[in-house]
Each structure stands twice: as C-alpha cells, then as structure tokens.
Amino acid sequence: MINVAVVGTGNIAHAHVGGLLTFPDRCKIVALCDIYPEKAQAMKEKYQLDCEIFADHQVMLNSDLKIDLVHVCTPPYVHCEIAVNSMNAGCNVVVEKPMATCLAECDRMLEAERHNGVTMACIAQNRFRNSIYRLKKTVDSNLAGKICLANVQSAWWRGHCYYDLWWRGTWEKEGGGPTLNHAVHHIDMLNWLEGRMPDSVMAMLTNVMHDNAEVEDLSLACLRYADGSLAQITSSVVHHGEEQGIVLQCADAKISAPWEVKAEVTQANGFPKQEGNEALKKALEEFQEQIPPLAHEGHTGEIENVLSALEKGERPLITGEDGRRTVEVITAIYKAGFTGQQVKLPIESGDEYYTFDGVLKNAVHFYEKTASVENFAEERITVGNYK
Image (tube, rainbow, N blue to C red; front, side, top):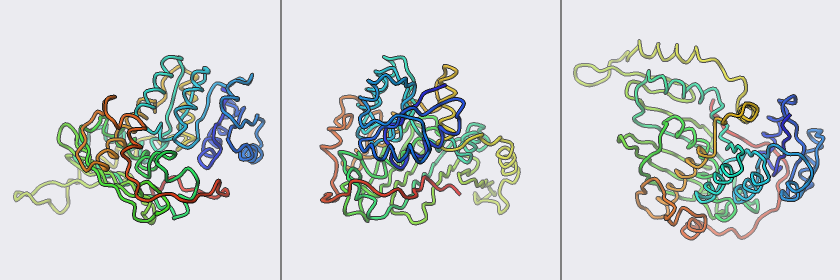
C-alpha cells in the first residue's frame, strides 16, 4: 500500500484525489496539506477521507506519519521548494504542471531526485487521453511520414475575474500566463509527438482581455527543428469554445487530435487529385481503429502509471526530464516574446533566463495587479476539450 499526501487542496487537487481513490487497494491518502487548513478539512469531509490535516508541508514531512508519495498541487512558485523538501525526506513526488517556474528550479528538483534515489513524475495528463495516445501511436508507425508542420491549439477561455485570485496573473507567483500554465499540456504533447526538441523559437505575447493581470493572456510562437520543419503554438485564455487540438501535417498525410485524416496525391501538374490517396487514408483509419483504448484517462491514467512504476521499480511515463523539456520551450517562448528576437536552444545555465530572477527581471508587465481576492468558492473548472 502506497501512502499518499496531497499538498495544496485547490481546484486541480480534486482530479488527483479522484484518481487516487480509483485504486483503494494500491494507495491510501493519509494527509492533506494546505496553507488554508479549512480547505483541506473541507476536502477531507467531501471525500470522507481518513487522513490528517496540516497547514505546513514541512511540519507534515517532519511528523511521524509514514508517507511514500507526495502530490504537489500548489501554485507554481512553490513547486520546487515543496518537491525538493519532500524528496529530501525520502518521499517520491508527483508535481502538477508546470514542473517549476524556471530551468534552475527544474535542475534543483532533478538533482534532489538523483541524490535521494526517489522517483519524480510531472503531470501531463493529456498523454493519457485516447485521442493523444492514438495520435502518438500513429506518428510512431510512420504511416503518415515525417512531421513537417505541427499546429498546436491551446485554446482556453477565462473570464476577467479569473485573475482576481491573489496569486494568479503575477509573474512572481504564477510565473506566467497561459503559455506556462495552460499550453504546458500541449507543449508536452508536442515534445512527445515530435520525439525531439526545437533548435530555435520566435514568439509574440500580448494581453488583450485581462487588465487585472501582469502576464500575457495570448501568445503565438513558431518553433523550428534541425531538419527545417516547423511548429506553431497558440497559447490563449481568450478563445471562446475552448476548441483544442493538434494538427500534424506529415509528408504523406494530415493526422490530428481530434482525429481526422487527409492524404493528397498529385496530378501531373502538381495539383492534388480530387479523391486523394484513398489507400493511405484507409490504412491510417484501420491502424487507428486497432489501437486498444486506455484503461484510464486523464489524471487517473497518469496516477495509475505512477503507482505501477513505484510498485515495479520502473520509471513513470512522464518524468522530471520531460517536465524540464517543456519548461525549456516555454522559457524560450518568453525570452523571444520579451526581446523580440529569435532564441536558440538549448538555454544554458549562464543564460539570464535560466533563473527565475532573470525571468522576473525581464518580464513585460502588460498591466499591474492592484487588487485581489484570497479564495474563490468551489465551482466547476474546465480541464480541456478535445471533442
């Protein structure tokens, strides 16, 4: 039995608790921790948990309570501190997205994992959506040929009051806008589908709808890979309908999530034949249909993967190294957007943007946050739309 503590009991923690409770014979929630202990108490009562409540994660770690795994579900600016302290206490960790606010923090976390001989997983639950999982399998089959252009749509909508919460919309506490906190899902998926990192990035950032936030609410980025292929990433909280997805224009066919397949074949004049490549379209459809569905999707699917990895002494699907790669692409987008210049990857430790202080020093404040609320009432949240 794996004893689990959840640190941070806000909106996303419910997805973690729900996932953990799916496997009562494999794990048990023994602690909830929040700087607002009344929120942790409310979560305990809602799910009828037999667990202890803490207001400080270090007090929790120093207690006599046996904890094997800590889920870090706090705002991004304390991910590193809580994860490192937990690993130094001998606990494995699952860190919500984004892994951290900068590459220096990511490297501190990776070093703590190595030094303590524990396991760190980073949440990127959309790899555990059937549509994304099947798209990855199809890419790896090479039926569609190499990826020439990826169009990534991280389209969300958040009302003006979304950024009223005290830590949101500030560079210091949230670390960024939708590029860091929403598109993180899609950038992880892009890195996974491509199986490689870009070598340069260009970007533009703006804030067009949220004058109570310092950070961007919309960014457009272009990534270039070593072979000349490109990727476009839209990161937004101004898109009505939240229609998200990834379209891959491959050498021989277009494939996407939500699933769609197109395949052209040329006439003698270079224009496409009206019927397209019917044989290839049929082969791709048949390949998709034969991929068995995942037993669990979303957070529950990733949590099951982490539990299995701990039980078997294996690495989880989404590691700290994966989380760092995502943060590196996001850092490059911010650097490119702040400077108006093309940014080369990798970002080395001597780069000013390697540290959070460097990011904060250079961050563009679109607006200044002058008022805030301490907590929101518990209401429904949206976690992605791939229909």
